[in-house]
Image 1: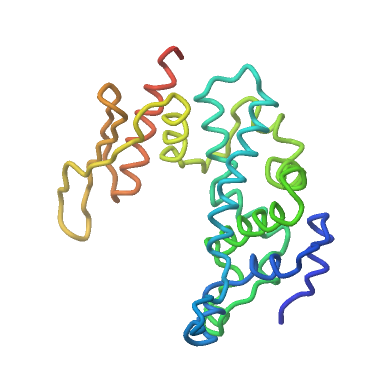
Image 2: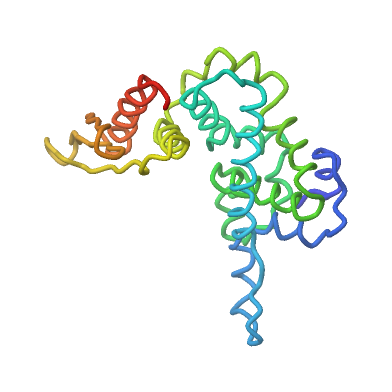
Length: 244
């Protein structure tokens, strides 16, 4: 049974003027698809995917703003690494769980039965959609308060200020992309250059490249892990370079 939305409004500290935008932020496409084909007048049923797209952009801006204000002496590389952690699915999933966001979602029956209310990807997407809804209903200032309190957190200066990231932090691909953007370099490219071993135990070699001057290769038992290791190598090359 879906929880009362007033409880969510209390948790986030905002009562929505436009309740429809809040409902949309919490509506998964599986719920929309169960209504049948779209109306013949060309107006589609609304799920939260477009709001997720907007919320991702708003979140990225506000986290960058918060980190620059909190750590004015940090290099682009350190800021990029911190941001990659804060906007990572692992971190945002914890925020969504803290809000018990899954209990407020509108899901299709199939998604409900498959445990959709606790799926990490679904919760993270819905959290980003919720931030977009908050932005559209109340403006950037209210979202800034939300991000500062619940996403970045009051303790970030202590827990992240000395780069004491969680041991599980492995999202160097995101960190490398943020750093490349900050330095106005081409976005990273990844190529699988070698596969070896039997099908059940393959090893992959992936090359990561930013522009012409920064290249790294790494091996892993999956393309994903090899790409992360290669990204880490290039990230460390870039952060070792003096900023121009």
